[in-house]
Length: 249
Image (cartoon, rainbow, N blue to C red; front, side, top):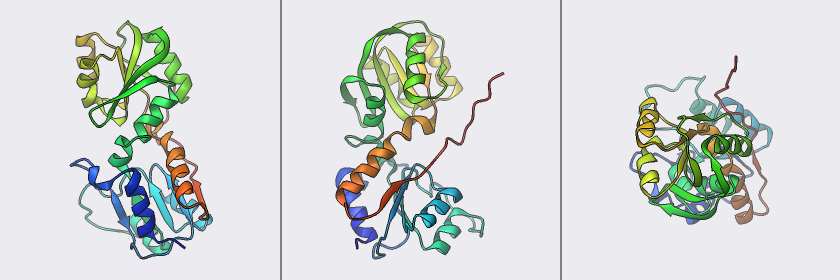
């Protein structure tokens, strides 16, 4: 039976924890490297429902994307995720920015979901590739909505788009680099109001498709890699829904 440390080391080989961004706090969030692992549940975020799913699946390790700890914790109450994890004896490894930037990780999975070709990396995060065909910005919105099964926010700038740059999650700040490297349009999960204003000034399309929706496609690949590394270990992907819902008039 592998240990938590064995799982951590396997992840470290394809998404090195040493590559995490300076703001990140990912790695072994809860638990001990020495704990034996009888099953793994993968997910984007650890919530009380995810803990229930792990317990029902007899999984005593959760491998998630987003870390539990970004800021100092003032207290841990019985209602908190951390308390529930410790009570259930469940360890947590978070993969965050190493999984964002590694080959085949979050951003490559997103590019694949959109069927981009000739994909190349710009810096650590940005991926730029060719769209299946030239399309208008409005058609690109419809195409992206169909690929990701989610509504799209768009800055309203008309353009013919042959190339698309993208970064999953909250990456409005990468927009200038995407445009300066030749992208006809830029897609991310979420962006600030003033980033949309800036994109209108440079007259290039900006699309946002949701933080969850642009990162969650990669969890299936994370699950596949873990199962490949530990073929005899029960590993399953959690059932998750986006925490933000769109209500139309």
